Amino acid sequence: MDKAKNISVLKEAELICKADKGIWLSNGNIYNQGTITVDNKDDNLDDKIYIGTSGFILDNGSFVYNQGIIEIEDEFIAISNAKFVNASEGKLKGDDVILSLPSGTFYNEPDATVELDDVLISGGQWLNEGKFDADDFNISGANYELQNTCKLTVEELLFQTNVTFSNSGYIKCEEAKLGQGTVLMTSNSILEIEEADFFSDFKIKGPDSGNDAFLIMDEAKPGEESSGSPSSYSGKLTVVCNDYFEKKSNHPSRPIPANWPIYNEESKKIDVPKTECSDGHHQEVVPPTPVARQVYTYVFEDMTREAGDFDFNDVVLKVTVPDESGKATVTLFAAGATKNLWVGYKNNDLFGEVHAA
Image (cartoon, rainbow, N blue to C red):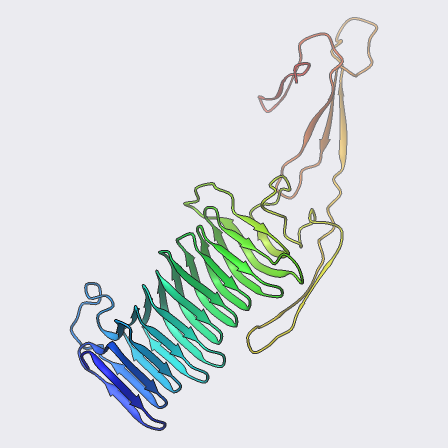
């Protein structure tokens, strides 16, 4: 259906398109209350070359308003300088389909649903007030608006550019690769990630006032290609993570998750109810009690044959028992001798000359 202009599909009606390029809408309109099916997977086009040229193509000021069902097989939904509104109770489904948004607007209204494989956003506006489900959600490019106010579920979320993603709803993903960019969260919003890879200068910001936002992670780690620039959290944001790559408190931009012993001695209750737009989260976050480490004192005397000064204060060490990683802490507590002395362990010097240390 080459360069369609105006199409209306009424309730209980069905439009099936198997043309080589599917539906190509240029400066036209589609109003759908029935079912539109685009199945041109046998178009003999090489999608690696003809990316975004076949399937459901919108350009040049086109407008689609869907109150029914649109199903697309093995192709692209490409929106360039156009607008796609998946209206209330509308359904957009795709089997092996990529939504490409280089410009224009994609708006998923309340009570509308989207089920796609891949999403490639490099410009324009992506606004979700309904339920949006995708395998891969890839964000690159610049000059656009991203906003989720209801429920977004993805298998992989990938940030490749410095943009802001506003979330006042619920986002759940199995894996997130967070390179640059900002997630701006409002009160009681949730970002839930099974495995988070932090790359460079990624920011997650909670609200300035009101209730906390919640970042819930099972595992967080630095990405293999991280530039080393610190990622940061700010605002009223509760971070919970079972396996966290930053366990030290000496990095002001990476607060310790609430369920680490070093966080504080108090429990924290998360009680966000389940709604149509959120799975909610209920958890009594209780930091585990830090394990008390036994400390031993080792004292040394540098007198070997002469009589007299056997006070055992020439070198004094405080040594903790090994922790769960097998590491012990050795502290030089005193150096009272006049001779130059060193402390070694397995032929490794620990401090240098003890008086200088």
